[in-house]
Length: 196
Ligand code: GLN
Image (cartoon, rainbow, N blue to C red; front, side):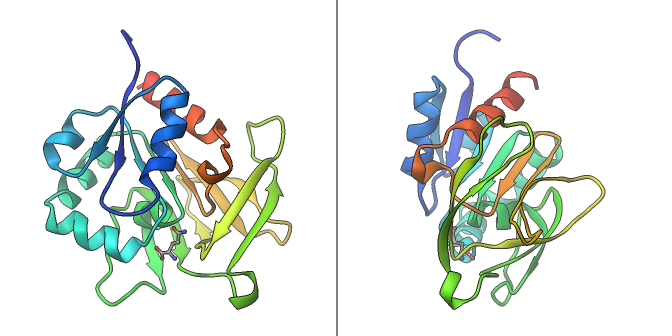
């Protein structure tokens, strides 16, 4: 492939800049995606953390939800963190009334799955394919309650709860690697973009 990979960050709401910064640090050509034309111009997309209900509503209002659904089905590499994972999941539990996801990832996630005292926490996690643990920041995070046959758990909490999955060119994490400057998931995502 000639030049840097062209990747987008869905920029409707959430921690867009943190992701753009990590991707730029890895040499990617990063653009912010809000419209279907902008989606059509990228070879991979990051769905940031934020509030999945808001991102869902805005994506539908901007006419982006359907093209994005189609692009994912067509093999677009996507990396979703936290709210982004929720948007990528085929099924969402404890969603808001009428909440939809783009889907693609064969998992069931539960929104805001961690109780009050652990609403936000940080921990060190082993991830399949990484040779050292990641520093994982959970902020009102979802839990992956069930992993379907097409997806693979790549990270679990000590109690066995699944918090990172991969399925072909899709990656989803319950936590935010980008806030601590962790770049290995983004590298993995860019590798999916380059081998597409
Ligand atoms: N609780 C948020 C939601 O349901 C996700 C939080 C996050 O992305 N940090 O969308």
